[in-house]
Structures are given as C-alpha cells and as structure tokens.
Image (cartoon, rainbow, N blue to C red; front, side):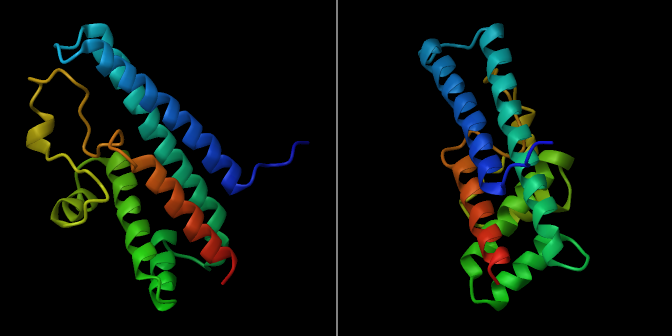
Length: 170
C-alpha cells in the first residue's frame, strides 16, 4: 500500500503540469510570430489550455476533499470563507472565493458564478464575456476564464496552500 501524497505535494505536481502547458503555449505563440495560427497550432493551444483547466479543477477538488473534515457539513468554500473572515483574513477569503467562482465556471460554464465574476471588479481572474467567446476571428481557443493569464495557476496554488494552512492550524 502506498502512502497518499500531501496536499502541498499534489499542488506542486499540478503546478508542474500547468507550467509545462503554459510553456508549450508560449512556444506555439512564439513560433507563430504574430501570424495567423495554423490548425495544428490551434489544436495544440486548445489541448494545453484544457490541460491547465483540468489541473485547476482537479487541484481545487482535492483541496475541498481534504479540507472538508474541518467542517461538519455544507459547502467548504463558503464555510472556509466565513472562517477566514471571522479570523480577520479578508484578503485570503476574497482570493479563495474568486478561485472558487472561477473553478465553478470552468466546470459548469455560464451561471451564477460566471455572472458574479463578471460583476466583480477584481483583476485576480480574467473573465471572458460570452460575446467574446463567440468571436472566432482570432482562431485561438476560447474559454470563459483565462487560465493561461499570467499568475492564474500560481495564484490558485498559493491560495489553496494558504487556506489549507489556515484550516489545519486554527
């Protein structure tokens, strides 16, 4: 029987996956040199973007599963946000909530979480309006949350680790 990995180990593995995909996206864009992307390049970018999305959804699900034991019942993200706010850690509570919304949008598409992100003035998450996703003139993969934005995955990872540290030590 193998020993299960710790949350920090799993976050680190997810970061490696996301960074690798981000580097491949950068290589594709560099090779295109501002020209229209080829079908193969578009497919490559789509594949790498999806890999980052899946890594983000997966690591957030692991975070929720591992931290749920700190609360009797109810949605972890809401309970964790309340605990963080009660402890005076509003900044971390807001970041956790923003990433929770982003993950919900990645999983479910447009809906309440998407509308809340659109109405939010935070620059933490880059939200793409649905009208923008219908515009295929750029010939690049489209999504509702830009997981390829600088610092998206790093911020998600940092937030998960800080929130788990808080929950484990309160």
